[in-house]
Amino acid sequence: LLAGAAQMDEHALTAPLAQNLPVLHALTDIWNRNLLGHATHAVMTYDQRLALLPAYLQQLVMESLGKRVQLDGSPVASDTVPVWWGGAGTDVQHSFFQALHQGTSVIPADFIGCVRNDDPYVVNHQALMANLLAQTEALANGQGSDDPHRAYPGGRPSTLILLDALTPQALGALIAMYEHAVYVQSIIWNINAFDQFGVELGKQLASQLLPALQGEAHAITDPVTLELLGRLRPLP
Image (cartoon, rainbow, N blue to C red; front, side):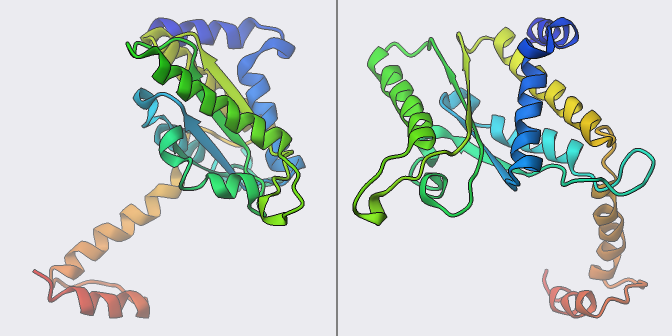
């Protein structure tokens, strides 16, 4: 895992910008967010072993780039991070893919798959890859129809990332690629990707509310919170 991450570190530092994977991914995300105005970003993994990766990337990207001020404290000049979300590809094709293909909001997406798989049933992996390629093609090209309910507009951006195989080294490189892409975006937006002050206020308030829920003296003054405290206190 660490060896793969180190290889991606070296690539990010030395590869020409036109072939630099983290830079290209970061610029694509900047384009989709700031030039095209897309407010969300989906990640779909076509390998069940990567089912938790979208949740990890959600934390990595949104905690690092969810900032509203620049390094000097002045407001940012443009929108920053979109909402990141997603899931395992075949699990979510019948949940939110309808919105990806025919919804009114264009949602850029990352599709992640593996060329080779350890599954002894080769046909299963081939079917999985067929679904992966079908989704990216459908999003890009769409399909016309005389029936407007069956028309697919196409022109919906996606990025396809293929690993040769899901090895620890490949996973380390993949995670590091996203980490470097986050840092590149933070440089462009002139924000600090390494603080998380946005999560502190809720923790501070929770530390005040817990004693209040336990019947102790408190300094809570918000009327809505006081009403809710009254409803919650009787609970065991």
